[in-house]
Length: 339
Image (tube, rainbow, N blue to C red; front, side):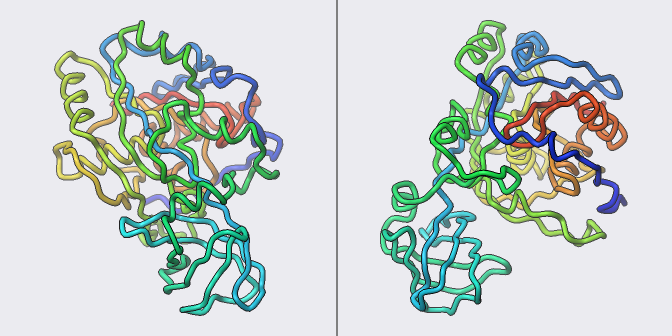
């Protein structure tokens, strides 16, 4: 079994994209078919896919999940919402000089009153005095990833959302979807490529490094997902016509593979804690569009499982040498799955 060190690599800091390009579809695209690599651009994507293929996208929308405030004792705190449970309870990371006390009160952004309910591992359980999503959207701040070394500004409000974002609930963008604009989607449709949607609300845990050397001991954070019946039907129709299922992003791939864990893709919703690493048996996705991922991350393990560890290592070396831009606002890869 691979260990954590097998997924490490050196990334020069200047390769980390700190802001989006002027145009969404101006990003570069590294195409990987087995060990073969080809430098293209995102605008080439329609021609790299086949008529009859199905492009599946994550329609989640990023919420204003970062909140600053004070404890009832006066101490400053920073809250990063991880997810909002079905009953409205807020699961969050909290940075404070001292641990919170159960039953204590918080005031966030001078507008939200919250109560501390308890703790789940590294996260805190909070309840807000009012509708959590509504309060977060009105008073919170857009949570850019920790490797972007600046505060979110007005352009990020648009650019850190996909153009097809609908369902509120993520605290991080499904970044492979950030490359799409109206013109690219139109070109995909003209090419005869169908589209479908799933929802997976990305949690802040996506940025957490794996801390165990023995990967069998790692436990994934859970994220809420939904697969509509229309998407299941679209995938069946794609298979019937000989097309390929192309996942836009690791979140889409994890959603589809979670919904097919028993061998048959089924519509429904739930929580996914699926940890994909080399040796995983992919049942749904044939091709993956994805950005470049952090060293020692579960996302790098996922793409290594999909494209092959040696192939991904070589592709990342090529991307670094050729000055590709990495992470959320960076460039992308189109990975054809192992056959």
